[in-house]
Image 1: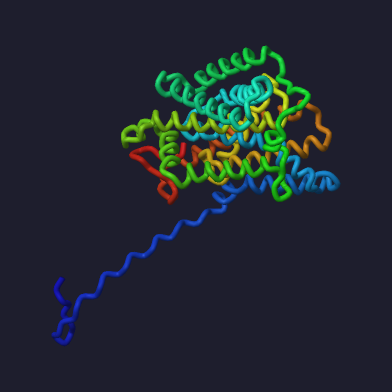
Image 2 (image 1 turned 180 degrees about the vertical axis):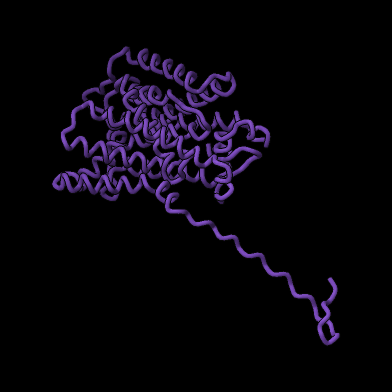
Length: 365
């Protein structure tokens, strides 16, 4: 570059190019802020309302510990159900796998005398294998995930009945090993240990989905599998990985359920199926509205836990719980669909710095 002439005929060196201005991250509008954190505010509001209505029982440490302990299995199961939903698939076999896992771990400890760490390890590996089977059936047999996982779930339920003979698995007079039951009964920092399992699993899933390429690939697959194929993402492989991770998480929930109940009930897993999907779908309306995410699922489970605990202490009838779960599921699906449609409006993704556009597909379903 030549020197620049001045008014007096002399020359001066050219000025260095100015540094580009850093791009500021667009701030959230009030509507976006409410959409992201409205569910969290609802959880706080519900807790305050029930604390005012039930001041002697609800805002106590014993009640909080009870909520954290009782809702640990549904929370873990909801996180497990969320992972395939990221890829646009649904795993309806999670309830059946939960029942099989908790029955098998008790059967191995009680009937065969296996050490409890070995029994738990076998169940975790078995859950991952079931997840692989689900993924292979869905991706390579090209069967809709609803139908495929419903079919595999029925097979798992049959295996559960075959193992138990349709009866409960009851420990002997010596009971279960204390170290095994401590997986659920012990406390840490004055709070139930299962609550820390949930927090740790939420952090791991947040790290996988939000901070690692694996999560970005899974979100792109869920948004537009064809576009993911065109850019070279192995959609089948990653979808199988999602089902495998889900099976591993659900089997861990089964181990925790066995340590909680200490009796194997062949049909108990079906009671957890609806709350798991309520938490996973409702969670897609929070923190990162329009897409399933771990933090949103945790907030959704908190809302459900607080609501059900408050309703129960108010003396609600037994049928209120399924009514609450069913209505919440309908609302969750409706809000999730609305959030997804908003994000797919023309220009909506271009204004978001965290969005991923691949060809004509957007990251968020």
